[in-house]
Image (cartoon, rainbow, N blue to C red):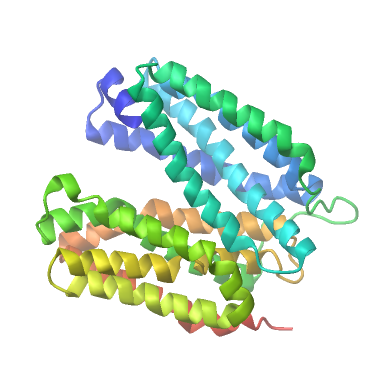
Length: 351
């Protein structure tokens, strides 16, 4: 939907980039508030409210009359998505604890599948010449029916209103998990925003196929997550984080240093395989920190993680401008090395 808004409002790249920050801003504001709400009332009502908020904003994104209105609508849409992100992970942890086995990677795999299906479905609807407004209305209606019809089937979650107070001061373990998620999301953001540029400008592939690097990464990510729960159950958290972090770092090294487009694409694939289950494992650990309510821990970790997604592409740009894009990718690999280095502290928390 972004190109439609850019054309309709006559925005240049700088103005559009500034307005798009409202999406992340709404998410960053809503995530801690969602943690507070989950702490007192559980994740189920937060999911319902987040669904209504996002669905109320989505159709308005198709008809923004002014840049200010677009920014305000994006802020509300981002707030709904941010609250949903925290609440659905809290709900997933409740389901995982009830089942007594790892299932978080499967949820995150379907999150990735949903992104691919959503983009494809909107593309198909737009090709039928329904128009953007009608397409947005159809998607919104489907989301409302799906979301609200299933809310009653969710578990109550982690409400702790009786004799418990909410605090925004997390433990050191929560901050560690947040920092590792920050690195993982920063690396994913680097692939999202810079893989096509790298293939085009450094490996000199045709612009029409420059997106193949991100496509390969996405497919590897989904495949890795679909098998991640069984692997976590078999090998444990320590080996999943240690091996996954090493493979993810190796992927960026291969992409940066192996000559040719094939080497870069292979590196992006390797990174997707390695990083696929890092965040699900870390989110699961965040929901089980002793002495910290799951809603508080997840809100903190998610907020820190998404900060990495927001600032990562800009950081890559600054480093690439000062040195080169391959050097920036090597820096990301060095940062990813913190994940296997910290795996022991995540898998064996202090008692």
